[in-house]
Image (cartoon, rainbow, N blue to C red):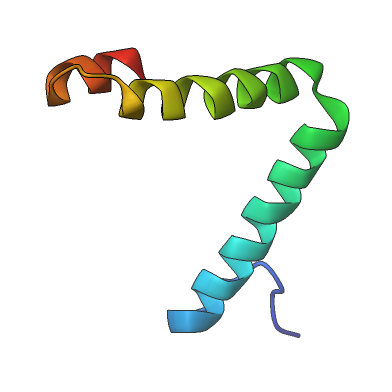
Length: 63
């Protein structure tokens, strides 16, 4: 009997890891109020920082 948790090589591993990561993001969006709040703040703050007249270091610090 093969272990279902055994490491899968190559693109299969990447594909499964991506699926698990997306499931985690979905769970965070559904169940975590703070995650949704931070996502909203980031959605506002990142464009503001990128559109500001600050130099690259200043923009990075704003984000």
